[in-house]
Length: 408
Image: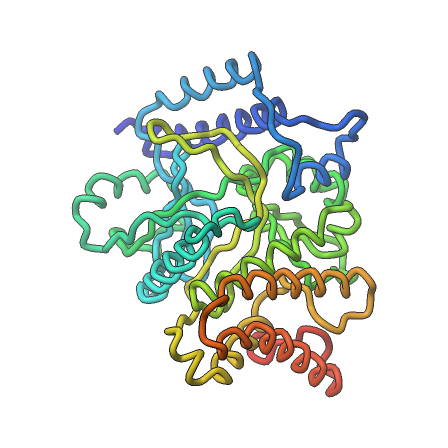
């Protein structure tokens, strides 16, 4: 292995080249309305869940593809850290469509739960014509055992290109999961976020920071920002996009709420999973190719991920002990980060978002449970009613909207 591969320079170079190429390809393939400005209007168009169809990029795409092909010819491209979760670090291999989540010491069981439940939810989203859901879920390929000598012999050395300071406490080989990568939001979207929300004195450094290339946006429909002290930094990795920011940008928040409602219904009533601590993010979807890794962004999507704290149940449990299931679903709903719209909010738009979320949840659940036991058919409305009653009790006791009993 060359010294440049050992120090990660080729990996970092390829990551940068691909990020630029994806952005150029994405810009060239979009059909942008006439007169659109390069800021909030751009975001409103690009972050729609039903955008205008992409067009063929033509000669510009050919130039970009040639640059990518040249970059992919580099040898010894390693793994690069792009994030972390409760149970592990997440690595990409630039130019490939998968990520590897490597378990933290002591979190192998949590990672295995993530893998098993993710598979259940993925199957629920892709059976019986549900694969047209507005919200996407990454494909999950396989669980890598710590003693999988074949995989670690072939790939273990590629982690040496990662930041050694971040992996020193993660001895390899380890337990890991291989899954589809959610590509980051393209540079043109990231720059719009920087131009709109980042303090002017930080914009240059934020734009230049390579960590900020790994940008997906958490969709916080259940929370607006509160006045805070001046920002010391402006991280784009796992960017928290709050309701007030989405409204400022004119984003399609009603579509986001409906997509979340549909997704949660699938998670609850097709996968039989409570959805505890799952995430909803905006990120890019890649073109899929069976022969070569794809770097082309097909569309920006909403995605659901992170199932390591979820609980699943057998359908008979919901029939025989429905109250226990509803209690767990309500707990999971309110203990989550503030993705979901909340009931009993004061503003018109927040009331509308809850109505869109609940309406789509009820619609999808009715389709999923049609023809099943009558007890099951009553549970989706029981869940929504229980959420409303729980919120009412918390407000009456002065706890405020969306109070979390365990996470604060």
